[in-house]
Image (spheres, rainbow, N blue to C red):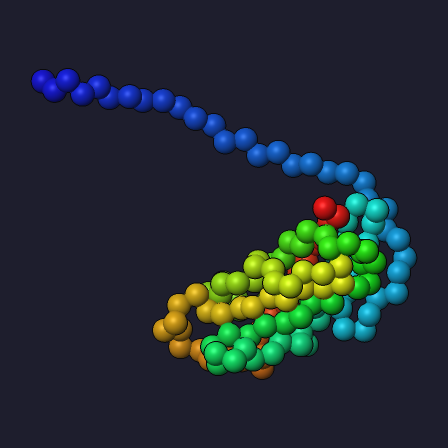
Length: 140
């Protein structure tokens, strides 16, 4: 017999959901994005199927500068993002990495997670698949 002992245990995972009422302040919405703002946060998205994606210089990535000026922040908030769409966005990386955050916006770069992906990633491909950036902003 070995001197090793088998250790067994149990564990639990607890998920907590917090909810709070949010009052929306009426503000003009820019023609190229959708957003809402409250005293606690702001949210929005780039236009579905018409996001201003640009080709990055590496030829394999795209990026977009997201305008959040309608949220009215005077200091740079914390931005939280996701990539929405109809297809292929599951195979990407980068949508949650925020670059150049300011009170009025930020930049996101997106590329396929695998270099051998067969589809070419272009702004046209992204908009054909209705890719868009969803965002939430909260004051620091």
